[in-house]
Length: 227
Picture 1 (cartoon, helix red, strand yellow):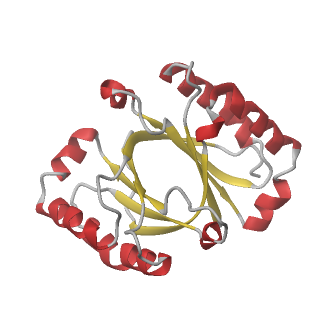
Picture 2 (cartoon, rainbow, N blue to C red; picture 1 turned 45 degrees about the vertical axis):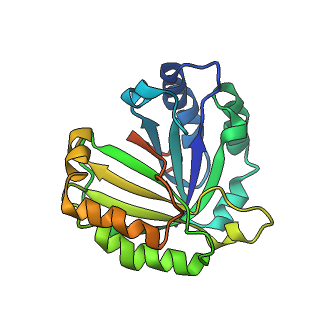
């Protein structure tokens, strides 16, 4: 199974509410019709997150396919082309980021109903090789962060190796995705010694500075082509 992620930013003249409604009710059903799609999840930023200004992204779109070959085979299908055409209706397409990722489940817990989903945008420490970064993140840092007691589920999404074969540097090396019962539980977790240890370890493998995040809730789109 392969997972593709799209980081979305709404069109500048579109309100957050209009963007979210269009993405869910108009664009979502178009995506669900793409052949070979096994699973699709929309994660939309919480409206209260805009209280201090605009966000880096308004949400992420996660799609699962059986293989990279399936993605390539359906890329020129009428359904996939309809999805691409529709994106200009509600997105600032110049801000869209496409990532193919390898998913590592660090804490395999159930996602509670109405959970909040925290998405952190991760970059490796300058000068650190990609394999060393990915190994450290997965094998050393992951178990440290998984000890934060209020985390219900924790996945690391590592940028696939093919993304590093081009001339340009990828915008992000991965996404850390964690689920919580509520934003109140997230705040409670930030006061724990396990959280302090997690943040203290970041200098060993991450670029300096605060990790950009968006806090979301997810919506599962049932694929229209699943038997």
